[in-house]
Image (cartoon, rainbow, N blue to C red):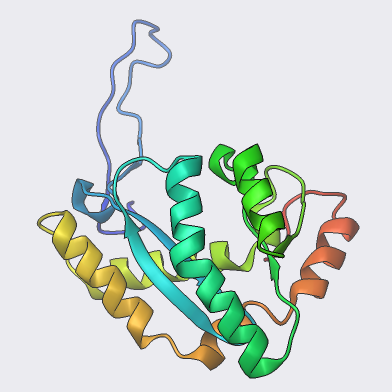
Length: 188
């Protein structure tokens, strides 16, 4: 039985007689087959900007985004809330490129170094999962990329700063849970 309307059961065939049966195979159709890449930021203060990334992300494109979106957001947060800001990003090649590290150092942005394959340490991954789940529940499959982008922007705009900050405030608990689980999966 399918667990989601976008999942389908199909029959498969194999040369191996043991496997030659109607086996349930789960096919997950994401966003009606269309996709888009986004860059967004969140903090204990709330949500920051969200933008669509055109094409594949590389270090040059990432630095442009950091310059146009992150630096102004960090400066705003530092001035308005008088707090230190540390950047948490995943270990994508564009994030770990020397040029990106140099750019962040030149702009006084501290970044948190953390182990690869640790998405449960990054609160924005939980936000993205929540956004994807909400989109699947509340919207029909988008006809095209533009419709998908509109759906994601609508969900992002509806998120309150208080809601977003809840994903960040338990960061120390996340670290302790990962340590307790010896680096394995946690509830986060």
